[in-house]
Image 1: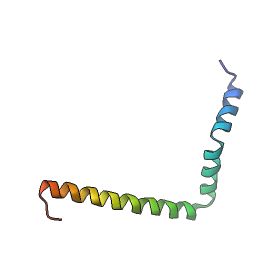
Image 2: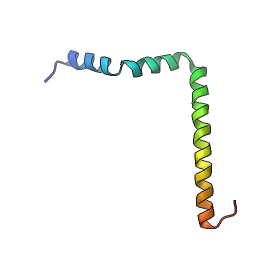
Image 3: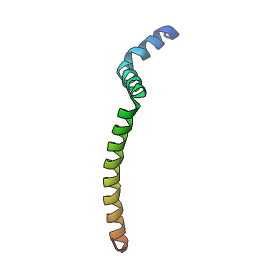
Image 4: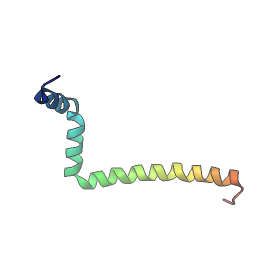
Length: 62
């Protein structure tokens, strides 16, 4: 079984990029909010199209 310190070091190394990205966005909240807004708009467009197809199949007016 690996030593707990070795496992910890491996995890730090493996997830270094993700941790740096997380830290960056936590320190730059306005940029995080802007990126989330872009993602939300993309999701909204896809969801609207999906709901319109479902409504059409069910016979609801669009």
